[in-house]
Amino acid sequence: MDIKLNGVTKEYHHEDGKVRVLDNLSLEVPSGHFVSVIGPSGCGKTTLLKLIAGFDHDAKPSKDIFMIFQDSNQLFPWRTLGSNLSYAIMKTNKGIGKEKAAEKAKTALEDVGLLDFYDYYPHQLSGGMKQRGALARALAVESKVLLMDEPFSSLDRDNKEIAYALLLKIWREKKLTIIFVTHDLEEAKKLSGQILYFEDLNGKIPV
Amino acid sequence: MKILKKNKEQYIILFWIIVLLTMWQLAATVGGVSGLLLPSIGEVASTLLDSMLHGDLPYQIYYSLKVILMGILIAVFAAIFLALASQKYIMIAGLAKVLSAIGHPLPALALLPLIIIWFGTGDASIIAIIVHSALWPILINLNAGFQAVPQIYLDIGRNLELSPWEIAFEIKLKASLPYLISGVKIAFARSWRALIGAEMVFGAIGLKGGIGWYIFKQRTFMNTPGLFAGIIVVVLIGLFIERFLFNFIEKKTVQKWGQN
Ligand SMILES: Nc1ncnc2c1ncn2[C@@H]1O[C@H](COP(=O)(O)OP(=O)(O)OP(=O)(O)O)[C@@H](O)[C@H]1O
Ligand SMILES: [Mg+2]
Image 1 (cartoon, each protein chain N blue to C red):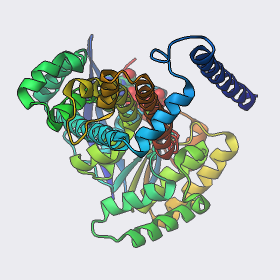
Image 2 (cartoon, rainbow over the protein chains, first blue to last red):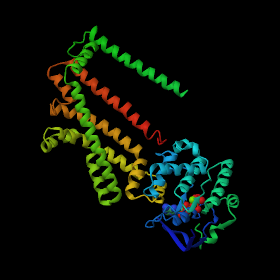
Image 3 (cartoon, chains in turn yellow, orange):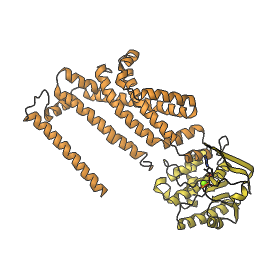
Image 4 (spheres, chains in turn red, green):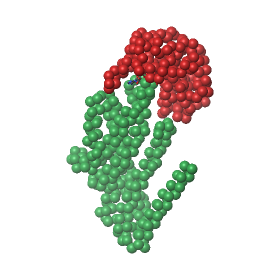
């Protein structure tokens, strides 16, 4: 699935007027590519991903383009890890049975090395495990494009390395399209051959 | 360390309970306080036992618990309905605000005469009193809970293509459960007080009335041990529900989810 933005603009309204965060921004990511977008804090990376995901007011997000957030609390705390996944599966595949959904959830958890934690509640998992769980949920619903918003920034060095290796392996195996935003050049380099600078995409950077 | 401290606290509580009971017993037996004013623990216990075995008290307890449960359930459903509707319609949100601003500070007993005129003195009135006592704190808490639902869950919900209905019940309601539970706790405390008071005023509604009526009847017969027995029942049930029932519900939900 290609991602193509052609001169998009996004403004936020503040008390003291408007702030234009995305200004005539263009971006093209062909299907199957892994692109890192790098930019300093506050430049509009999250804004960009949310726009691509379709979280803007009247847009309609779909599970094909799935967002993975920086916040490690993105699994629903009231469901176990397994139930988070099978719930997501059942809601995105109408008519699939409970057992089939649980089976698919297990496969996805196996892919990220969390099968043993199927019955754990998110708060019983470490930050790195929760992020892998969020990744597994995107795999479970068979998303085609992953929008990753600094998902590993709160992990320590070792866990980051584990997550990078895992993400690259999954990207290759599932032929996903990935847009990975980060403010860390080293991270961007490790993950992808294609690094885009936010300022090059955007017409103007707000200060 | 923490466990030790908790244990110590329990011993202190136990100590004071024993001291208070001993003082009571001493005042009633060797202290020369008239049995009409302060019966001994033994008398109260035997009256309580007698009322439980041969009297209407078990039924009255059942009645009071039944109506309070019904009233709180109605209040919970009404609050959920109003809070969800407030999310969708700004007109309803305004209405809910006005109504809870009026209703929340208004003691149920102040409404009693009006409720009698409107609904008579049957079950409907008692339940109306409970609903009034319970609805506003639950609604106010639930609204606060809905305001505090993390945006990230709502975004994920949309990403999973959930319907507005599913977002309401899967995400908003579950994410707000800690708020809902504390609302129901306040609601119980308020409606338990109002219920006992209203039962005294209403007399034997239902078949034989509730616990409030049990206490009131003891007074008419100057049966002080019975009065004490009734008060003890009110205290014990209140304690049981606040300490054990709510703890149990929290343990099975928000605590299990790591949400408090
Ligand atoms: N909901 C909002 N309302 C108003 N302004 C916003 C909103 N969200 C973001 N902004 C503003 O838009 C700008 C870009 O924010 P954004 O979160 O997209 O940056 P970011 O690149 O993701 O930063 P970080 O690396 O710190 O996560 C910031 O100046 C921020 O103040
Ligand atoms: Mg961001």
